[in-house]
Length: 75
Image (cartoon, rainbow, N blue to C red):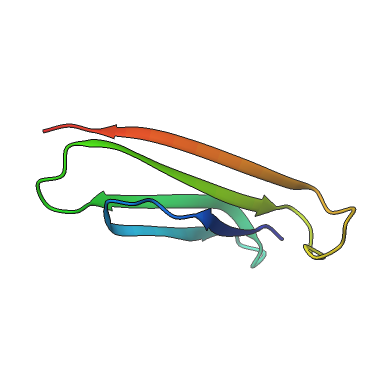
């Protein structure tokens, strides 16, 4: 099972959230990040997502990945 949380939230968002795509086995197959900038915002934004690919995410030996995403919003 995969778990994910936003550890550094974007600054200029109307929507900034994580969704999970579930396989037929009831396990999370994909982590999806969805973002929508506030109206009329043009510029850069940034988010960091912590992904754990273990059922024991608090365990120090868990497989954890930090994903850093910087993106540009244009008109």
